[in-house]
Length: 552
Image 1 (cartoon, rainbow, N blue to C red):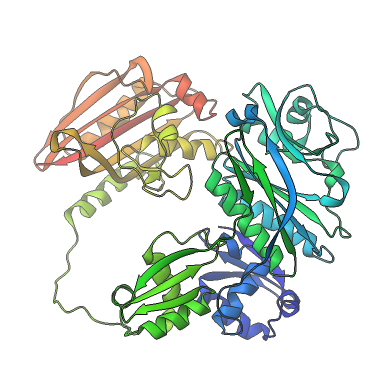
Image 2 (cartoon, rainbow, N blue to C red):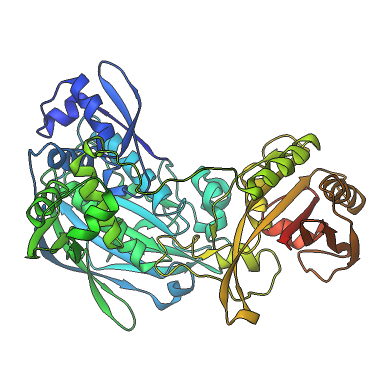
């Protein structure tokens, strides 16, 4: 999770005069964790659902509300700049969306320049998924002139001087020779053209999502800036822009909007229009538990959360939510903020109204046995999220997309569905850890959820075991031996048949079934195809199996 570092003096400069010990005791109460501190600095970890708190300005804004120093909706003025950026239709296939804003009267002296760079990179990780979904550029506005153009350029044209270089480089050369280019080349290298942002004189501001130009480099004496946010998700682009603009406005920056002209529409960014959501008093008390809050109480707590609030009746309060609070998706999210402001430690514990006698669920007894067997075979357990995405789950695994449970309002493009299989998550784990020594042997025991066609697409939950082995000589005989050992130790008979599973090499995979007193199993195993291995940027053979447990 993202960690931000700032000095105690930074908070004092932002109007919070609190002793270090009290500050350290108070910060964890507002959903953060103290990573480290000394006499001058503090390192604080915030959950990724609060990207607005990834800058010291955002922390100060939230903290002032929590301690009651400043409450209510922070109203940031946005004036029109009269400037615009035109979006070239050719860029639609690469990174189609862009948000633009000007901010005057900023201050980059002292540590502030470092802070904003750290803030930018944290947003790249939390919202941008390491620039794949969103990339942010911050530029000196005084060295370029509107109107601006967001174009797709041929690889060998529009050479410019990238950051930290002193000679011009073509876009193609940047991807192959510049450190940042090599790090992020995978995001655009498969396209025939690359994105560029130009001013009216065709001077290059940046090559998103790779690198900014040296021309617009931010320095301590920079006072007026342009912020560009490009990406593949329009909602995420605008959210990131709103968060950055709000952070600068918190310390006196003047936000100026700009028009973004697409082929079929024109929008104005940033749009800091708040959203509204009603919260019910009885729902809040039920979800929090141990409270008897009134509508007036809830209004006061929402003001401390830096919302505005309007009492509609004794059981309903309208919450007016700032545009930078991109984590508020449901009434439950508003209730969470009420609970935080109420102080979690102030909620009285209650015993349930029913008497129960606890005993261990039979599945978890079986799970412990499965885990013991896998570890004894030399495997290491991993645990992955149940949420994944269609590309990783189907396309990269060479599988046809099947009916599945989708996330209604996904926060990120890589968490859009509930998994129906475990193998792709294990492949992603190998991809993230391919720098580790071989052999790698990993397994996971977990739940999946799928739609059952025979039951009118009702959701069905199931328990599965999957494992992968990666090393230079991994083969079918090895994975068959592993599956045989697992099933025999669990007391299952084993039968195998030819498989047409396209995740595996044809002729080197098998379907498996098994029967025991308590239930049956079905699954598959084999050598993962080179195409799938390449899709996950792996370089060595991979063998895998997956088994589903079915109770009688």
